[in-house]
Amino acid sequence: MALVGANELKRKMMITVDGQPYTVVEVFFASPTARGAATMVRTRLRHLLTGAVQEKSFRSSEKFDEPDVQLAPASFLYSDGEGFHLMDEASYEQFVFSSEQVGDDRGYLKEGATLQLLKYNGEPVALQLPQYVELKVESAEPGMRGDTAAGGATKQATLETGLQVRVPLFIKEGEVVRVNTQTGEVAGRA
Image (cartoon, rainbow, N blue to C red; front, side, top):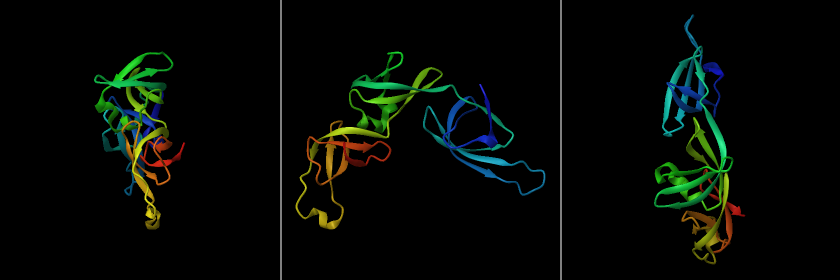
């Protein structure tokens, strides 16, 4: 496993600090003002397992291991009282994630959806959704004539997974829309 120097850190890089896996969110190099002082590397790190963000500073001479992390294609099968059932498409192994592990991403999961499974030391620890998912509109408020004059021409809609979003007035029940999984905004018809 290759060692990564603190002066080589970049955003979205994965490193191991104190035996724990982190993703680098931000990196800032602080040049020394005094002679003989070492350059400091200030970082914001997100813990891969818990999602907690923390700030840490390192000397530029420090080195880090790369964590044993892989992305594997997976399919969402179904959800029940036990949790969310997924299948690794490479090994056909099935996994269950609890509601707490899935969190707000549950609104983007429908049966048969393809996503990425983040594995740490061979064990699945997190889900990585595609940027856009296509979901059917189950119910939508009727768009009233004259609503577009204010410029905010959207209405509330409920999608097939129970997710509530704002959609343009011309979207009707039964239509399929593309939803951005990062922002939760509708990007138009599918």
